[in-house]
Length: 189
Image: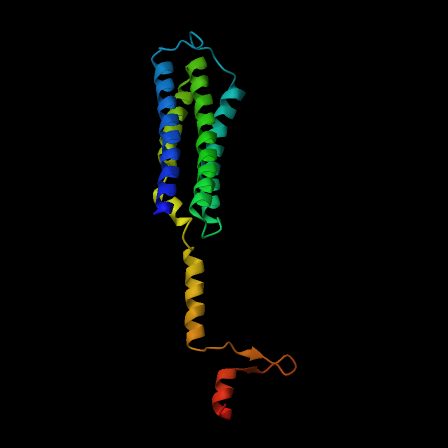
């Protein structure tokens, strides 16, 4: 019961950051788009080099941040305590969220400055990417449970132990492989 309360509190906190961040970015984008906030007046041209790097950075950052988060969650030691799992998930979730937010914010500012449609469309793409960053109760809860691989090997070891299956051993000098269970049966022990 206490673990569910801790996990739901953690998810609630992450969702507040998530939705607040997205709302801020969307409202700022709409304000720049409809000239509600006159950041720089009329659009000024940007250099081709700046435009190329500004387009290349999101292309690199999007998969890196999503993959980094997925790898961190996948490689996390399991099982964790609820408070430890919430802290771990929060840290990695915020890192992913704010890395993508900084890139989105920079594209919005560049769009406001230059009115270049490349920056407009990349901002739209970045806002869509946030749909893949939604905090997940199941993902956080999975950090508090044993991993499926660990549970499977533990289950296999328990079955092997119950059936008294002993792995064959190899005699170092002769190279013969013997099974102690079979030899014990034949000798009558």
